[in-house]
Length: 356
Ligand SMILES: NC(=O)c1ccc[n+]([C@@H]2O[C@H](COP(=O)([O-])OP(=O)(O)OC[C@H]3O[C@@H](n4cnc5c(N)ncnc54)[C@H](O)[C@@H]3O)[C@@H](O)[C@H]2O)c1
Image 1 (cartoon, rainbow, N blue to C red):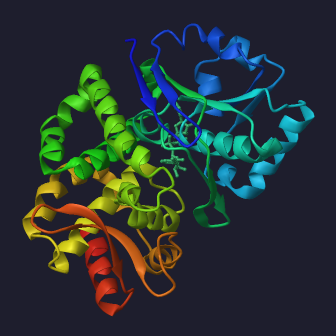
Image 2: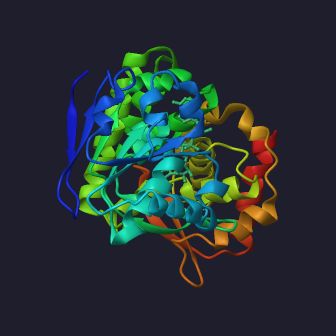
């Protein structure tokens, strides 16, 4: 498929290219004095196709773990790039999922006060969501994504063939973010996706169609509000709860699956507070539950979940800044909620019914 999407950013436009032959012929990535940051699993799985990249003198292979996107663990990456004599007219090429993207984008925005970077997303989550939007997010100790920058890539190149080797849970993680984008787009978009849910997993062409539509939905918001000061906030739907669940379960649940649980929890809390009809929670619950499946049984320690929720970037000093559905049309909005006993009871009730 040859198609492109042009995204406007504060640094000018950048392009998302679809290139079905990239995996087989990665030579185009060698242009522009590259420094490769490659996901260790991708390096292993595609060792024969990527022989040339892996043998390159400026290649750094990184394990895609949340610990490796902490501020401490980025230091050896900076050190290696400096030892490899990186210059401002070189290019950092990140090949992997959201973790390698976050490390690559962060390092590229701070080293030498900015080195251009390009991204080859290899997970569904990265292809359908994180590859656009300029954000880098780095962890500080147990606090996820608390450090970061806005740094759009030079370009993004998507080859759908990478998805063939993803574990099923990583496909569902990506579907979590696709569900989120369509929920934001409105009830009709979400319901259509819910009807196509089975075909998403079985039919690559259907999945490709939804990857593009998820990116187009996200494009509208990031072009309106690249720096996440207003309209873009709603793209964090499911994320305050999702991040808190990820943190409380020590990242035992893939990101987009935690976001699926997080959206279900947001809908539940909203319905319990009579902010949205209960039917809205019930309607979305079916596909969301389908997506997070057996992860519902992962024990979620409540106190740890609350502690993580209290650290969310969107909070003010006294209130939680949550993204919740509101009104008969279930419009996704930012809502300030006091972290009081009533809110805690609603969260506990949700977590308890999850385990049943
Ligand atoms: N910066 C952003 O805008 C943004 C947006 C959303 C999420 N994120 C971050 O992204 C991270 C999640 O990203 P992710 O879901 O892409 O996961 P990931 O990068 O952790 O990758 C998931 C797993 O898939 C493996 N993998 C990658 N590509 C593969 C392939 N083609 N075949 C087989 N295995 C492959 C990885 O090695 C890893 O084990 C989280 O840390 C999240 O906070 C960032």
